[in-house]
Length: 214
Ligand code: SF4
Image 1: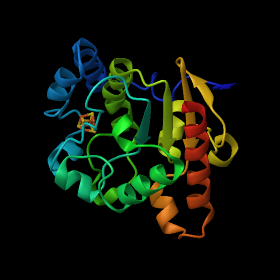
Image 2: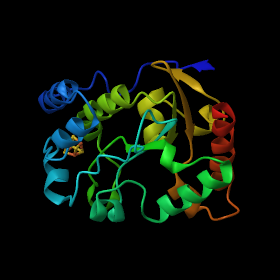
Image 3: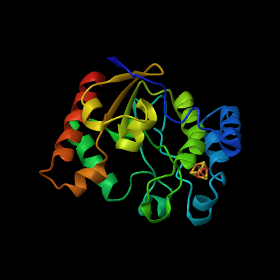
Image 4: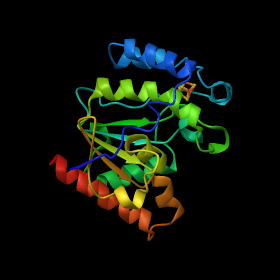
C-alpha cells in the first residue's frame, strides 16, 4: 500500500462553526446518536436554508461495514429522499458494485458534505471544512477497513488538495489506518457514457477493491 503524502485537506481549515460541529460530533457515542445530532445541523447557512434533508448516510444493518463508499454531496434525488446515492448515479453504482462482486448492503455509503449544494454546485471549502467533523466521526465509529473515495472532491479530502485522480487511482493508499482507494464518481461514468474511460476505470477499481476483501 502507498502511504498518503499529506494529511486530509481540511483538518487545518477551521472556523467557529467547524469547531462546533467537530465538538458535537466527537461527543456522539454511536451511529444513531451521531445521526440524530447531525440531522438538525445548520452550520452552513446557505445549504441549511435550501436543503430538504441532511443526508447523513446509509450503514449496514449490523456490524462493521466491509468498506465505505464516500462521495461528494447529495444530489436532487438524495435531497428529496434523505438517502445517499439513490438517483441515476446510485443506480449505476449499484450495478457496478454487483458486477465487481460487491454488495452495497455490506457498505457504509457516505458523502463528504451532507447537504445538497444549490444547483448541484461544487461544495465550497468552508462547507467541506464544517462537514468534515461529521465525516471524521462517522469513520471513527464505523471503522471501515477500506474506503472508496468516489470522485475528485472525495479523493482530495482523503489524499490532499493536489490530488490528481489519474495519478492516485487503481491502488490503495494508507490513510489513518485504512486502505483508501480513489476512483471516478458514477456521475462521471454517466457523463462519458457506457464506453467511456470513467465507467471502465470505476469498475476496474471496484473489482480491485473486491479482490482485497475476498
Ligand atoms: S453541509 Fe454539513 S456542516 Fe453544513 S449544514 Fe449540512 S450537515 Fe451541517
